[in-house]
Amino acid sequence: MPTRTLTYDRGGFRLDGSPLRILSGALHYFRVHPAQWPARLTALRALGLNTVETYVPWNRHEPRPGAFERLDELPAFLDEAHRQGLYAIVRPGPYICAEWCNGGLPAWLTARVGGRARSGDQEYLAAVDAWFDRLLPAVVERQLDRGGPVLLVQVENEYGSYGSDQAYLRHLADGLRRRGVTVPLFTSDGPEDHLLAGGTLPGVLATVNFGSDPEQAFETLRRHRPDDPLFCMEYWNGWFDHWGRPHHTRDAASAADALRRILAAGASVNLYLAHGGTNFGTGAGANLADPPFNSTDWEHSPYQPITTSYDYDAPLDERGSPTDKFTALQHVLATGPTPELPTLPELLQPETVPLAETAPIPFGPPADHPTPPTFEDLGLAHGVVRYTFRTPARSPELPLTVEGLHDRATLLVNGVRAAELERGVPAEPVPAPGGALVELLVDSLGRPNYGPVRDTWKGITGVRHERQYLHGCRTEALDLDAPLPPLTPGTPGPFALGTLTLDTPGDTFLAVPDGRYGYLWANGFLLGRYDPRGPQRALYCPEPLLRPGPNTITVLELGPATPRTVELRGSAF
Image (cartoon, rainbow, N blue to C red; front, side):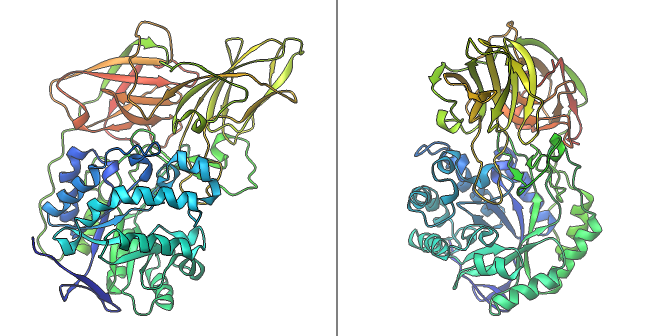
């Protein structure tokens, strides 16, 4: 294969000496079913783009120390981009933000190092180095100068918004070079002086991220890097959603106007996002407001989990369908003929699927502890854990207090549902007599993906009976990142099962109209979390997950509800 060389100066990029304006779109391989990568990449080309950008989520590929999974995904995605004639930008982190759980950092690692993450701490760097040793060979083999599509590789991600450890950034950059990355490296930060000062490195291309006012952003970048080309690495043409908050949208004309001004400045650009996709499974992140924060209800809790949908009001919606924004941006980007948009699967007709059977949670074997362990102590990143305690037999009736709840729990006293608890939301005291059986059914939402690496644990840290801590705790766990164990239908429990019978599969969105909150699977694949507080009302189920004939729909309802149906709908919102 012919090899190519990318260079740059103040005037822009050059590919083998010829000018190249990088017109990129973010499309994350881990948010799209692999069978749909070809269609989504074709749609990027139809938008007028010549490059695709993707992050790499470390926690997806090393869920347990030294246990690497799905390492074939990124190279397969890059190969498909190359087959379609697209260049590629790879952003390997190790931290990625991306509204992805823990910013892509493995839960087992942040449980160990806490606030020492994203610094020159030796324990943290040893884990990063081991990860990069496994990840980077596939990227190196696919660089431009080896006949592949990869033309840029990022160092960390928006580090200026987090820290100031220049030795840490240098360690990462040197490590990329040492492992064979020869294409240009880059950083990306907000267009503010202190963010660029903290997040950039001498000799490494600096880029900026923003959603408006490109002239001011590029003026700031020029002050720091007068000899670098202008590049908006994240042009935010939409935004993400939190549960319980309104769905974000951005006017297509406004998005097109800002893009036009970016290009008028002579800059390269990466649309964040061209296609958002879905936070399948437990992938969604969260945001955490800085204290102090007064909270009286869930909507205003400082902890704000991100929805399963990552639609982002992008030019291609969650199922890959072009929006009005697609047309508006295409008019700005495309300078000649573009490919036809691919044909999408048919949307299935609306239908109601009865949930005819129930089943209990298939917990693993119980374990006893002197104090309640976190999920991480149990080897879980995400799951459902039942914590069981006894109040002292001679104690009077006293209020219970649950400490360190991350993130939701049902509290039962002597087998009776007594309270629904939420992280960051004050709860009324629940009385419990002496000798009472106290159970907490705890499940986890996303870890914060932006800001300080703190409070990343899941589970609880303690239960008090008035001032007295309850010791002697039994746990039973269900790992939600593992394949669902066999269920025992016909037995009462929070699982509910139904059958969707199809002649021909298609795309659909599945809703649990009478559910409170929980998880939804299609043929054993965890689509994600549902929550009727919105703004998302249904979970995207792509065609490749379904088959002709019977399809098993599984619901785990953890709230005070008994779902009886699942509905097929035409959209998530």
